[in-house]
Image (cartoon, rainbow, N blue to C red; front, side, top):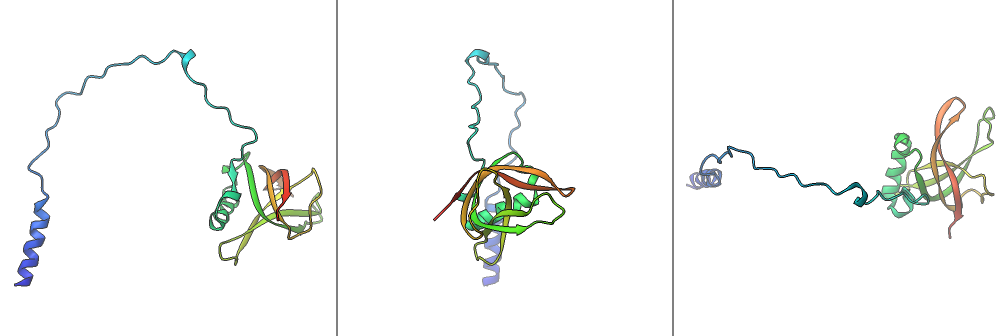
Length: 165
């Protein structure tokens, strides 16, 4: 008995929402009336980009999102070339290969949400001295490509480096 009731309810549900027939198809397209566009002189110009605006502000994101965005920057750097980036993390210093024209690589390192993994972005800072490794920094600059021993690499050309804390 209950099996028949369930089958009847299912049949009712499947057919209860059926339409009454085919929808009418319009035979003629509605008339389109052209409206004149505004004269060129009254159009508002496109807003100009603030040259100091930050395009990718990693300081505003959660630790999970910062880690994901840095991973995206490393994986697909062409999408970020020429953009102004602001990033906060610990300063890490790595000795460079003696064959290169630099002694050290400087990076801003971020942790993932569980603090088990880290990754960073290299930066150069020519306008001042840097604090010791492990210091928390905020680096703002332009993400660019450069030649590193014959291989393309990417870094932030820092416009400002600030210690936090």
